Length: 235
Ligand SMILES: Nc1ncnc2c1ncn2[C@@H]1O[C@H](COP(=O)(O)OP(=O)(O)OP(=O)(O)O)[C@@H](O)[C@H]1O
Ligand SMILES: [Mg+2]
Image 1 (cartoon, rainbow, N blue to C red):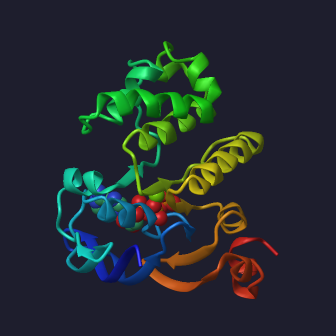
Image 2 (tube, rainbow, N blue to C red; image 1 turned 45 degrees about the vertical axis):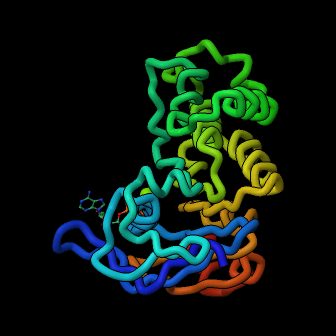
């Protein structure tokens, strides 16, 4: 067992958004969470990364209860969030943004090595390393957001709406990179409105509808499911 959510209830003030959520993200996998606008996907990621405290329920990581730890403690344990909308420092250049992803780390030699590895994964970022993040294309910005997340040395990468607003060829490239990151040992929790994309590229999936998990299973089975086809795939 790796990252597990048990009976989680979350909301903003009195407005409850997530209801009795249970899910497991097994080590080494790509797990997806799909659901429409406003289903509560981002709310879950914000809770997992300690930005939001749940009403009740538990978040367990490698056997340890991390439910009410601070974001800093959670990042230090290896859970890194790549937020919706990328949230880059647009006036800083590529390299400076990458260093921001490593700012909690003390191991400066390792940071240099990791940056070189990341440039191998994203050659375009190496070419653009002195360019301001705000001047990059949408796809390059998403690459930088992922790369900055990797600089935090994640065991689990939580990725929110990576594909949003990007052309299909760019999305394909990003998906290949995510698979490579996974192959190199990082567990991935991929949150997507694009149900086909998420299920085509994950091992296991959860479907969230108005704050509740309504279905889960191997992604290859979910994509064949009649209800999912009708509700999300327009078939
Ligand atoms: N800061 C906030 N204060 C109050 N309500 C919020 C806040 N953030 C989100 N919500 C509400 O919580 C619900 C779930 O929002 P959330 O952003 O988690 O959904 P989502 O599944 O990520 O949607 P999308 O696909 O559009 O990104 C929505 O009804 C939203 O209006
Ligand atoms: Mg969202």
